[in-house]
Length: 282
Ligand SMILES: [Fe+2]
Image (cartoon, rainbow, N blue to C red):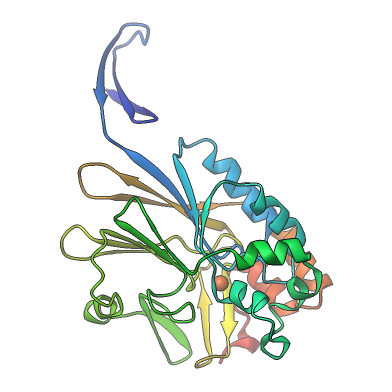
């Protein structure tokens, strides 16, 4: 029987007999980087805190966040305070952009609480986040697609639902970019797409909002089917990138209660179940 444990780039291989004290140990040095990928937090601080506790047990080198940080009827001020303390690599999402562009007519129900309550310092911090970033030279980060924060990279809307797009469509949306790894959010749906040449697209799902109804550009539902906070871990070695998708249970009832107290009963149902209620479906 062999057990593997990982400690910052070193794998220990242990051969266990009947007496576990008798161990043959071989040490393999591996060139390895582990990246925690978070997206679409949507002001859900208890979900974010649960994810961070999980990350702390998994030997992560870098954490990245792919936008939509503070919108939602939950804890925008507290979430901003938490995020501003981190040394994570972050990009802005479409909702973050709405909160800093100064157009109150564009602020929808999802953005009202954050727009009314975050401090000028927190808004300035949000404004400082870029829409795109390149990390480790070969990894491109953005919220939606390489072109826009309001379109899905790997999904198509049809018949009131969001579906996985055909591979040629997904590839065409990358617009000829040649990075090895593309990290995106926006659809709140965990995805791993492997393209030719060891290229991967990873969407970690949403930390803070497991389902939603969106009236535009065409009314549709997104549902993950459970209330868990979701994120993923990417392990880069000399071989093909490896990806884990991790659902993290947290006190989702407290988030649902908070949404209802703030007048958003549909959002409360999304947070409680990971589904859109029947009466809200298109
Ligand atoms: Fe989002």
